[in-house]
Length: 169
Image 1 (cartoon, helix red, strand yellow):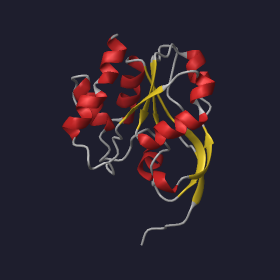
Image 2: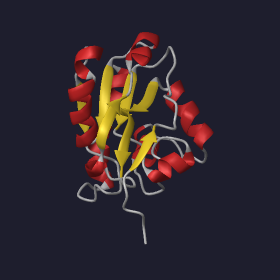
Image 3: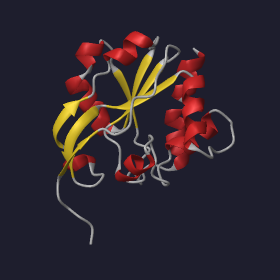
Image 4: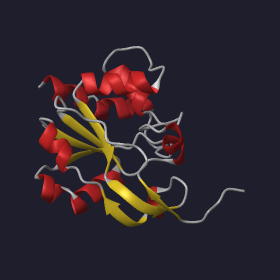
């Protein structure tokens, strides 16, 4: 039986960015599987990394280090809107007592052209907590989470390929 209790968690994954970052992709808060993998979108059924491979016409990723190098070499910064919260498992809908992440260092270090939020929860929380401070609206794309079963991989691809277009623009 799974534990259905709230747990207070401080984000265990450091933000990924450098001076070449041009897009900031924000999730809400890392899932249990991402926390275990110690990297973004670590659930094997999350479609984020397979989407990036298709969008950028490259082979599937085979390691966390390969994903990290890919993101940085393509100007992609990654983190989450929430720095700490009380959460049950990986459920975004259970999040309470959220403390937002400080995104200013990422903006000040890189040359951000766009903020993309992965799913509605991260989009709403970004708008509530960080949009004004960062001075940038986000583009909210459909969640790549396996919980978003209403969106097929092909539909997600059609929406998410904007990442490539922004980076090329």
